[in-house]
Amino acid sequence: MHLRIYIIILCSLFFITSCTSKDNYLIQNIDFNNYKNIKIDASKLIVDKLYISTLSDPYIDHIVKQNLVSLLSEWATARLKPVQVNNAGMIKVIIHNASIKALPLNQNIKVENLFISDAAINIEMNLEVTIDLLDNVGNKLSYVDIKVFKSQELGDNISLLEKDYQIQEMSRSLFKDFDNLAIKKIQEIFYKYL
Image (tube, rainbow, N blue to C red; front, side, top):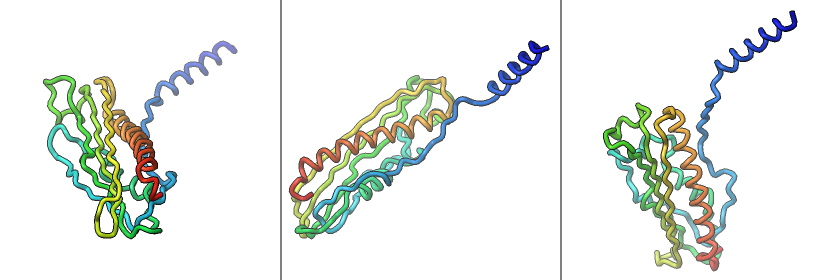
């Protein structure tokens, strides 16, 4: 009698757990609200978006949840705080490149089919940014160049949701690397203006 109850309970548990998905990919936005800002002697901050997203293969900037250009603008606003002390100039963040590419690992697959099939892809993310500190007439007082690159292969055995999740998490990791490098360089080069 007890054995039957245990078997029924075990079968019920097995049935319930087999119906639930263990692959819960919650794609969360990247935000910089918890980042501590760096005060720089300047009167204002300008973000100059020189990079223009390409809508053709292999670029996928336009179809990701959060594109890198918008994230860079948000990062600059959160991290770089102009506080005028002696310099009436500005901090200018110039976005040269903020691209995301999806390259098929199998040359027979077209890029436009990568997100409607389970084809294996290589994702490449590239950030190239210059941060200028200018005086009130536009002369460059100091600058830093920051370049960060990430590449990751996504296999053909993952779902489209998992691909989207992996791309978002790759963007998050890219920005952690970018932030660490940028802050280190700013503190090293802009030390007179902090």
